[in-house]
Length: 286
Ligand code: FES
Image (cartoon, helix red, strand yellow):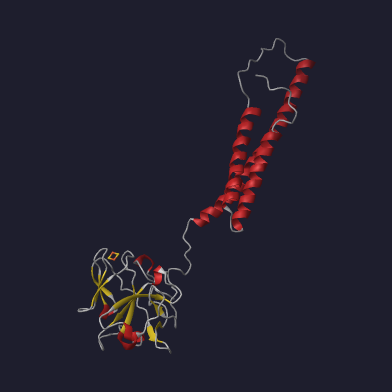
């Protein structure tokens, strides 16, 4: 099939496609750097890859030699006609080399820009949880409330009783769900001196998130002060700062310091003693 007369210099379509691809990749980098916009990023990535593909296909179609060639055997050597033809051929070859060099640079620019744009998504592959694994909504003075948002007074929980509480204003905070336990008078044993004031009126509190795999620790046996996790049967000793005494958990349940506020409600004296939940982020807080 005949392609008709060429109206633009050979290779101009290839350069245009590579240029468009490079510009799209640069645009993608800028959009990503300023916070990203999924639809726009998808569009730019599509144009960048499409431009590369079109450029390579046009290069193969327009600039690479194709088909079979038959070279006539020379019958005469030398002569003006042959010399002129050789000069024209040489000049055409020089042009071709320059064009390919230019297109090679355009291809390099398109690939380089796409590589640069790819660096930003790679940065997103790592986790960046910030302080979310070590900080919860609990803080000094935050009242303990029930799932219904009701603050709790000491007299509302009998000795041996246990209640799931949340920080006031955060009744849906899964990382802050806490077991509030009313111990028998005089049974609390602080494991370190800084925990001496953490059990006002014999109330103690521990994270409800199991340190094995994060299940909610749900069962309290007041006779021997033990907490049970139903998932894999870890058992925690409340009188030993909720240290694990059986099962796969290896870390104590983090303790929440408590105090009674000026209006007589149970409140936190700060955040947990250490990060909650499974041990793979169990580095102590600075
Ligand atoms: S999640 Fe609690 S023992 Fe496994």
